[in-house]
Length: 532
Image 1 (spheres, rainbow, N blue to C red):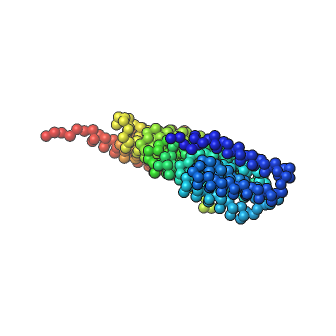
Image 2: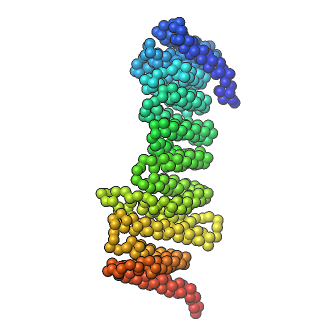
Image 3: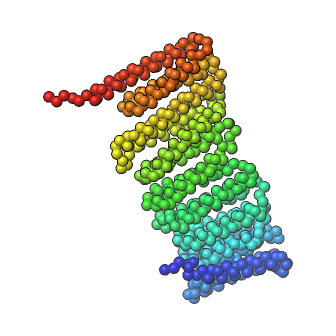
């Protein structure tokens, strides 16, 4: 069975032309002073009420379509009259008068549509009400009244669309509202960002909630038109955020971040209530990730500290990658987990290229706190992500050989240890530079840190029984030893230098002990027990 719009689209078109003729008659009479302002309002009220009564009479005689068209045109004329009386300089209804009249008429149309299934009446009435502000223009001082007018009609249209399944209502209201907002933004030329941003945000929230509710009423079907309008709603809102804030030379990161996380939350909500709705869930999550990524590029302009925008960007991407990995893990989507792992590797490469330029931030009254500063937290987060990925790969049920799974897990852990090496290097370097520590050469202090790092790697390898860590730890130890003999021993001898060399020696002996114990355990494990 065809829906209402397909059956009666010619009727709707004819009704639209009649409404336009009335609106342009009002405009023409205003321009040529044919009828006084009060007379125009009175004529509009008379025609509108007459249309409602005529529609009711026709409905009682069984002529439902003609009745709904007539009543719908009457409703639209009443909306136009209210708008004219509110936006006209000659009558200038107060906000309270507009709200009382608007609420009463909208409640009547909503009740008629919901209780008596007057679908044509609702569509014609709301369409006429929404196109009215395009013909009868408000002034910039009346933007609050205009916003309340449009908001109320949208809420009613979305309610009926969601509860009754009348899809054409939300399409018409969405397109009409978009045209109204665009027309008035460029016509008003706002002098500040506050009001246009608030109006755009309110409409975005209304449609976000309305479309989610429509999907819920429609047997939890988040696909199709609801998904399309939802994504379009987000794209339009992000466009306006960027456009408005760019017009006033302000960063758009914060509103874009809010939109992104709202869509990520919507994706998870869809997953919770409709597990089979994979396409909407992935669409909302993907769009959320894209919007957050766009916001991250602009967020750095909020901070004056050198390099802090790199920290902000990486923080956002770490959170997004973790979310993608969690989705892949929860839904057993291997591709999503691979994307997250690939992003993790790229983030490490990017961080290694910019981490050295991140300036210190004063926290707790101190210029620099080692391992407790923005840059250090990024190093730590990347390392923890790698260790978690390594453990997840080891426990995964992927259809690959055991040896391949183990190798991938080891590689993830090894990359995480490389991150730890970068963390130690940057912390020692910044600590010596910021506090101007001269009692021990920075190069020698770095060598001590790297030997400690080498011991950590050996201990990790001994615990996990993976030989690759022995080779990696040995490479770090040999490199550090060459650095000590070639660079660190130059210059004058000091007691601090003697102490550092002693510490390095003691640590090296400790590494030797760990390595010897590890080798003995491997030898014992390789021996075959004798069979009596």
